[in-house]
Length: 82
Image (cartoon, rainbow, N blue to C red; front, top):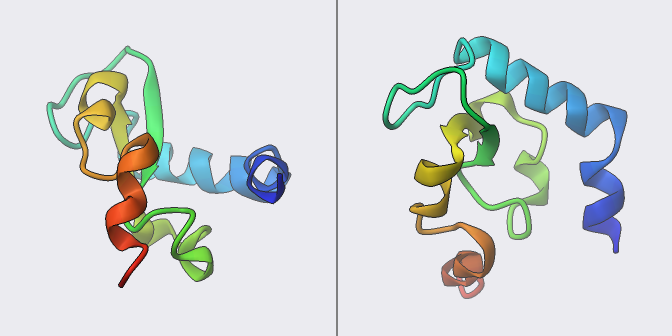
């Protein structure tokens, strides 16, 4: 799928690295460092393609905090109808 191609692109990896650097490799929810981190899209990747590479639409989260967001994995469907 196209989302997989995008997520493996140089542009996406650059966006991800920029999010981590801006946030000093620190989870923006719990403040944890030195753990596995995710670059989370605040407005979901699937429903806001125009924001996929906007630094302001990203935040650094640890895995645990990311799993707790309302948009993690399939939960992003709340955006489907606007």
